[in-house]
Length: 132
Image 1 (tube, rainbow, N blue to C red):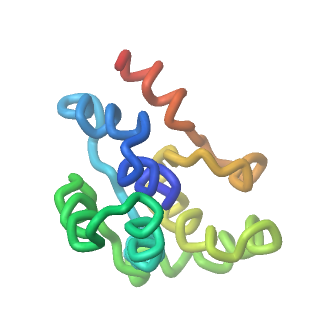
Image 2 (image 1 turned 135 degrees about the vertical axis):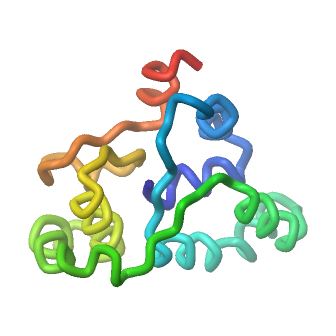
């Protein structure tokens, strides 16, 4: 999964419903450790915007049923991912490389992933597909 659904959960958006309704419907929420670090980097700013304690947001993030993958798990796909998406957004290279490694669809609302040869679901599409 990409960073934007994680941030949406922290904001209390509709993405929360995907996590609440996932048991028996989703194998795992795979995320690159790089993506988790990116989200953790946003927490202080996000907390200020929301008037929240950053530690509370860290706890919410830590409690999500995520399966983090280290870069070593997908490094064989980094060059291909870079070729496909780096010109659009270099921060998406790790996300795409993990998707290529796992051969699974991506949960992302980021249009940069269109036309890169993977299956992608937005939050709205997931909610519809999971009947939530």
